[in-house]
Image 1 (tube, rainbow, N blue to C red):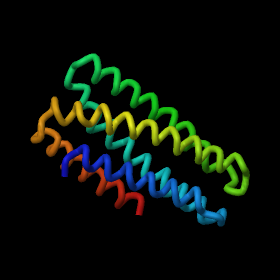
Image 2 (image 1 turned 135 degrees about the vertical axis):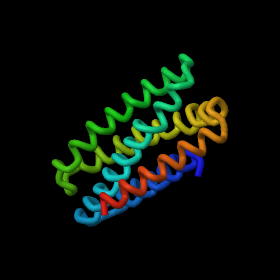
Image 3 (image 1 turned 120 degrees about the vertical axis):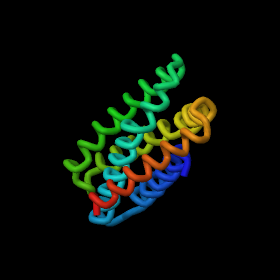
Image 4 (image 1 turned 90 degrees about the vertical axis):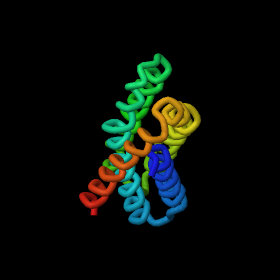
Length: 149
């Protein structure tokens, strides 16, 4: 699978989990879904930061550098919100507010990656390199999912 396709697949999965969490009425179910979101985002950001972003950075262009620096900062902000979630009671109105903010942060990040970074990577890295990265990322994703289970 191409690296960009794998990342898009993960994006769709997280978006689906956010929608389910927003609709969930029962606090226990919301907590469980948020746990799934946290695990999915941690694995996703690890894969991006350890495999995909370094490959894009190798392009050596100022545009690639700028996109990668911004993506790392967006991951940092998402991590800050993720770290607070376990401390907030799912029945507290702040819980829903944090989920909304987190969802919006992730949505913005996904949009920039899919509209700017992914096309640049596919064009400049080439099909073969994108596929190699995808295989490496699939292995990481599989290992991460086994650890989480």
